[in-house]
Length: 221
Image (tube, rainbow, N blue to C red; front, side):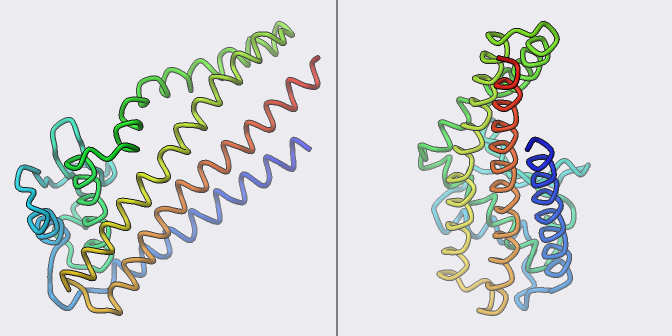
């Protein structure tokens, strides 16, 4: 049973990764007709919502596009900051969606930010305690470790509405502001959907891992 769970997890991870990369690659090659760069699209979306205090910066390294609420800054990779592709506009507006969440005090985003440090600690402790439980055949240590892992799964669950909402805000802005044609909007939505699936996949894989850990604990009772 445990091997089946591992295989399913690997298949989910591989399938979603392939889909995301192929979708992103396809729409990075499609230029939007308006010639807007990702940075320009994000700025227009922010200003349309009366937000003028968010910085937009280009990443020097491939650290991943993100919104930093601590400094109120959107950081985009070079391809998305300067790029005029449909993918660039979609991703940049998604990050602007996070900035809008921050400005509106969006509750799930607040909860996720509050839980980040705790989740990092829980992730480290969970495997450490589970390993000790296996080594010393301690049901109690494994149980505590599993509860720490449950906290990690809960964090991933909280992440889903944050990501989906940011994409929804991006799509609504695309439609209302007319920055992309109808066909280009379809492409941008596909890019955002592919990105969102990575979070869904991460949650599913963690749930399967949780089931596997419970099976391991059960076999040592």
